[in-house]
Length: 294
Image (cartoon, rainbow, N blue to C red; front, side):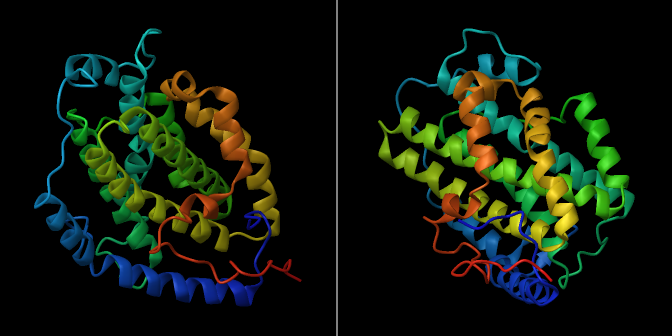
């Protein structure tokens, strides 16, 4: 297990940046910022479209029930687990997607999508995550419209986008760690809820794999841009950020339980979550402990 809050040396940071950019260029292909697409990932999607997969039989989630609660902040107490799961999937990417779009409007992301900057790839990957989660829900027969996060979260996201990176990056790292935990737990829950039909479950796994690999890379990229002091701040902020995110998605508490969620997040073991995926990014320090920076 890599300690995400141990700082990297300048040489390690330089090596990471070089290797991670090369990895993104190979895995995603050419970025097109105006259309929020990658050449390689579009080929992946064309293949999926030629192999549509849907659950059969009675619906596990009713569209009208999903729609009614998708627009609400807090669900009814008696919702079944498949519906709670669908709502968690629908709401998980709201904040990141809103943040990327807002940063783009501010001009803090490259207007033309600089292919030499990992942030260009990360920004486009967030748009793909919305697309992926929409397709995940289609597997179980649910159509989703992406909505914005609640007003208080929008204000926080806007404030973060305007902060200097030295102040915003610890929060970004915390948010990315939470994202890995959320998707990891949702995938395990999907196996429990939808394992009766192996084909559709396999498609859900295939789609979630794309997000998991991306998110683990995002965590390591954020870590690589922080010094020891900032990483210490991030470690202290992690439980606060986690509670703030989860309070905006109360379906998670009902589906998975507060204790289990916080345990998964605070463990911050993102690389174990990505182990099943052969195309994951492997940090240069994956096989040896990182020595604290001098």
